[in-house]
Image (cartoon, rainbow, N blue to C red; front, side):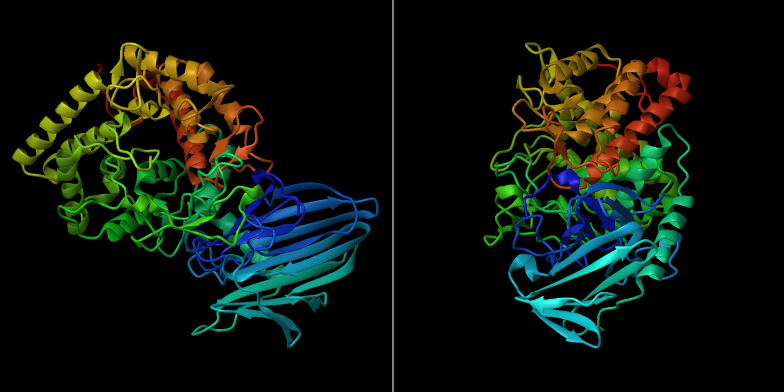
Length: 609
């Protein structure tokens, strides 16, 4: 297979895992059971790592879309002989609705082929490869179904077309005539200590899954601007939520490169505390209040009782801490861009911004946390105390530099956020003398950032203290209330970042970053809106929102010269950025105080420098 672009893929989800399907009807990625489980289809990362394709035999054109308000994908193939529609879904539990979807998904991938016009010759190619391509299963026909078992995994395929098996793969041809339907159901289960895989009726399963997704959308009515884009992004974020715990993974994939041929390939199928307040704000913005509470409960359980020990910066979907990284040597990488990595050694890093992420999230949803549970009360106090203790230390920073620590401005700002929110909680969180200590540290952090984070030479706040290197991470300063967006130095910073790091509205994180980082551009939208540049902010938002693929999906990065999406896909942070930017634009348009005074949507006035 000649690999296409990352953005050629559609995204399916069931509340536990995700699958990616390309424009030619090939399932190139599925890690059933949970997002970070071993793949059974991994052709995304190596041609030999397994796939399942259903497509016309001859030449064809493609048009595809999600069924309205769902993550059920419909691909229409048009050929010289006629037209055929392929509908793909990861099944939700039968009859699950609203906030119950994804809790007990059956781990089934269903595919339905329906002839629309004429007679179209079709081909099926089923080639499972377990554990990232390491294990090749025997394919055995049993009771009219096709079983594949190797190691710890078992797949059972039931279809209305008989497949022929040879060399650990199966193929079939059939003709899709107008009005006819050919269905396939593929169920997964562990080999041992589990029931056999389910293989339900595809038509009923697809219809029920459509109803499940739409019931969830009906419970989350976003009232602001750009509702269509926000609704799609909220669905993507929901699709990247491991529903049994409520944790939102950063992405559904591992090791999709930031630069073709580069080596900055990482496993993003985990949960970062760094993303936490951004995620909660996006869920809150998109009216996902139940998900907000479950997210915070997950964080408290994942962190457990902490005292003086360092707080982990990331976790597995059930709160696992040891995410030790290793390379999968058997995989060549996406478009021959190795390495392929499992795990992520960033879990070992110090990132002091996590204090602010957690306390900002708690402040955002304070009405739903009061009275504070003893566990949450203890957690927030300890995080505030650790911010007092550690804010002067260098760290790996938001972009997780490996092998070096610096005094990153964005990390110091988030320490200020932690202390500021702790002070705002006041006696709900600490005794008067403790609140006074947090306030004193907060003021010291702020004074230090204003002095050491500013560069006279480049007329901007920079990425780290005593540096002249610009970094887009400083755009969070007005968004978290550290500085007003119309502060003269903040305005100068925005101008400098745009001048040096922007190309056609796409912002790189730093000079030399291989591609633009999507969420940074959405931060710029918020800064412009809050600074009173509403027209520019709206224009930039619309231009960014148009950068999605044909299904409304963002990767982590975009090549500003070619427009190609790069990095892991789909990327929660990118969709979260869109939701939050739409929320800021809504706030600014609806609230004259925000419009004229540069206040962020956090219900307090940030100070001037």
